[in-house]
Image 1 (cartoon, rainbow, N blue to C red):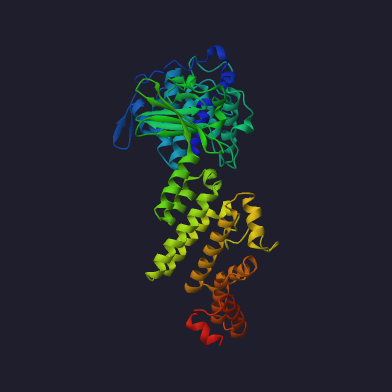
Image 2 (cartoon, rainbow, N blue to C red):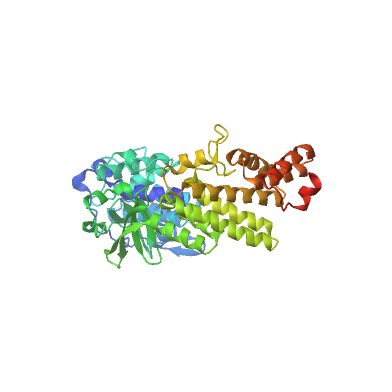
Length: 469
């Protein structure tokens, strides 16, 4: 639950702020473990069950816990019991949703207010009054969750504490648009819950505070927490910090929980762009164009694919081959999809519009194939070859659109081809077909006749001889 994830992130990393609120000399160090079991208390009835105080807070029966407290005249509890109340409230809230989660937060908060002589009439901590060992950061978390309809302020505050710990500008860490990384995570490993704030790991109980092991394996430039995402592997009980640059290169640091602390597993240098390239190329060479595009689209970090004109040309060649095979087998729709996938992979390097697969600025600047190729591929000696492959693939794609009863999509492509490649006969043939099917026989005949002029002596399809005698 997103709300509770924010809550737990704030819970530990607000300790710096709470130290000011609770008077540093009286606060328990983060490495000191709290007492796990509350002192024996009278029992209270909850329905047909009689609960001890510890059982009541463990089960989230806050009414029963309050009844026990009231039966003793609302005594002031020691810090160990107060901490236990707050920990159990947060733990139960993490496992719940919506109103039930809020019930645990509010129940724990109300119980602490009754049992602690350290709050003012508005429920705020009185500096210097909390008992020694009282974990003010837990109370501050509960307090700020009280009656909140939006948890953005708490999340903002928590992020600011991370920035202070690592001496970073807050805006360098995270913003609500999600455009920056978020080096914060909450990991549940068995019955232990860990909060990761940058390269620091804390547990909910407050008995562990540890820096990420293996930091000495990173270079100085790699040790900026703002560059990382945090991932939790609950099955393997591992935490992974992953830093990937815009080019797909980066580093991964991994640590594993061993029951007492976290130990370094490995530091790996990664090149996701190279992995994407290898997968896309493998699928293209196998003629699996849809799978190649899926790898291109899903894996991300496509800069190596986008930079390679040879791979883009290979995609178009393979796309034509597969499309012809499928069309000959009678599956025009799948033939069209294969060539569409090939164009989607080649579009960036060929500078094509993702909808029509025409040059991106075609409407503003219609021009010849040679001129476009010079702009797209510069002095590359293969530019003419890439241009011919593009022309042939685009013509076949338009033809498949016609056969697949999509003439409105085919027509603008074919009209553009008569400008791009004015001597390319197939474009006139298919454009004549599109216009004929749309009930424009006179205009269609002009394009059929141009097709005949470019292919003197034929052989011409029967439909051309019949429609343009």
